[in-house]
Structures are given as structure tokens and as C-alpha cells.
Amino acid sequence: MGESGSIIRNIALILLFAVMGASHPALAQVQTGNLYGTAVDSEGNALPGVTVTVTVTDTGAPRIQITDAQGQFRFLELDPGNYGLKAQLNGFSTVAYPKVNIRVGSNTTIETEPASRSVSVKMGLPARA
Image (cartoon, rainbow, N blue to C red; front, top):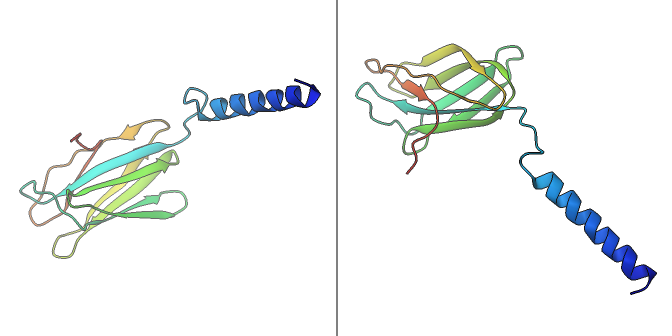
């Protein structure tokens, strides 16, 4: 194998190490947090179709999710900091949480009690099926 074969082998090794390093989870540093939740009615039934908005307290930048058939929503890769959360559905009163803190590398959890004719939000990791 001549000089060109040696160069190709070296390039292949460099690419292999670059791909392994970029995809290795221990080398990646998490800089964000996640928010998971479920919207329920006063009887604890899941509410699909709820508009859930999280807004960065400092900038006012919103992110919006609609709950799925199980009433679940998720906001992934949120920058750390304080957020306001609002859940809205026609026929129900709006639920607001003015200070939800997102920390780097964590999943934020807040549990609430359902109220009459309102949307309640239970935040945390979704149940595993």
C-alpha cells in the first residue's frame, strides 16, 4: 500500500474519531432543561387540544404546544431561567403559573390540584407505556 493508501487510511481514522467524539453523550454538555406536563379537568381526565404557552420571563419570547390525546405536552431544550406558563382551552378557565424555573440538565416538575371547570396542569415526565 503506497503513500496514497496511507493517506486514505489516516483520513478514515480521523473521520472515525471525529464522528465518535461528536456522537458520544459523555462528551456533549447539556445546556438546557425540559418541561413535561399533562393537562387535566376537575375530575382528573386528560384534556387533549389545550394550548400551552411558556414564555421567557426576561424576553417575553413564547413557545406553544398543543396537548395530545392523553393531555400531554412537552417543551424540550429550554434555556435555563424563569418562564411563565399558561394553559387555555375553550369552555375552561385559563391556568397560569407565573414562575416556572428551568434548570440545566433537569426536567422541571410542578403538580397542581384540579379546580372546577378549569384546566389543571401536572408537570413532570410522562408516564411510560
